[in-house]
Image (cartoon, rainbow, N blue to C red):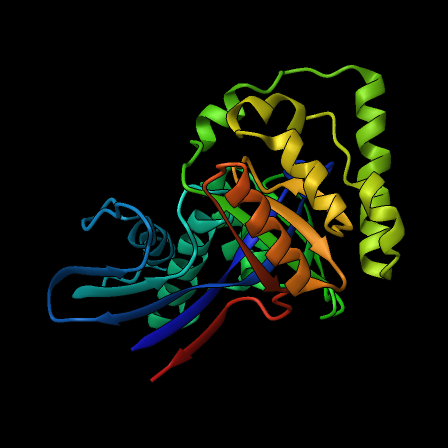
Length: 298
């Protein structure tokens, strides 16, 4: 039996559209084993409907590996226990894809490198910003060149934590991406390049004073505000409560604040704010995951 633990991830991170991502301490835990015949899938705590057939995302990712290495299992059993909320902007699909690929690779003889599987995962996802931190952990900067993912994972100070604010509704990624313009003007492009560059330098060096301004964005967040109830108000309240930087996670609707202290106080204040303003949101403080996917065989 192969056991795989894959972290959730928060991507875009303000100005770093399709480029920046970080692994956080929520996990998708898989048990994968070869059985005499058939396909058996059991899921727990996935927070939504999960296909129990060959269209299951984990199994589809596994098939990509099996077909690549020429391995044909007699049958497969997948048991998934996931704490990552689905369709909320925390990399639930990337966790399934990475977990399925790494599990299938271990089951079939470990023929593929992590880099090769990351290329495959990014192709399935369309971009690498969630897949890279799900695989390698830490704060990841990623790009795609000629179909290959180039990524750098940086381990962050454990003092940096992430307040993850999750509403009780979801926004379909396809719908959220569809609202974005196909072209941007030069001024907005320069704005985002400067902010994304500063964000990386400030986060890695721990210069938290600059993060708030470095998280500003003009490429995707302004267009997605209409899909996130009270987004401007929530952003303002997080800064009043001590956030160092607040941004829309992935395509939303989850909102993430970066903290370097006052974690309990921030959580209490935001939960009270949501309660008083009839926002059906939850707030959790998560640690950085600097390890990434862990696989073991038992």
